[in-house]
Image (cartoon, rainbow, N blue to C red):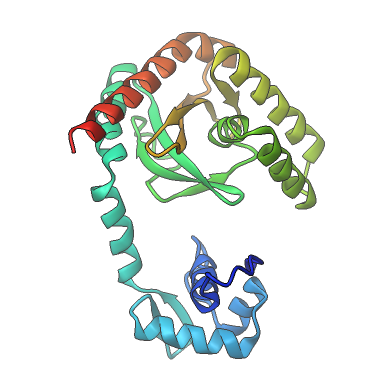
Length: 259
């Protein structure tokens, strides 16, 4: 989808190029110009020009056999540069790892990108191969996960209403139930400081919000196999989740003051 901001300060070609890069997600390794045009809504001639530019600058690779494009290693290096350069992650990761080892559960930190949550860091305690592996950079739905619900709950009223309107327009399956769950999560965050979600049948998770630098924030979660009733999981781990949140926020402040 092409951004509609028409400010003269924006570079439209750059924005369109980034929209093309956004088309590449897990399961979409190779995309042709026609597929990219369909996903972005851009004219085929514009897509052709921009994909050639992205190949020239090292962000895409052209597969001649399939007449399609894939992401180039340069994109991976940007993610690595972010992780190693983020003072917030440098402060949070050791605390997350310590909590994971002590409590024997998974710990994640994520932020929103449009209608998805993107993991900034993920410490996985569970080694069961049947459970999915979650890595930094992985995306999950904003409307179904405790991470996303905590994010939505932390929005101001106007931004939250706008996001819920956009989600409703997506015509998601079981939207009435999803919407009910979102409002329940918002109430839980306001009253208890955390919310819960059963996005996957075998996993239960609870999340809260963590303040980062410059007025930004992320969602912090604990997840564990749902072997017991969800209320038991909450009762067991919610105090530790809020304690970890406070520790991370404190460590971020100390880290930022030292630079």
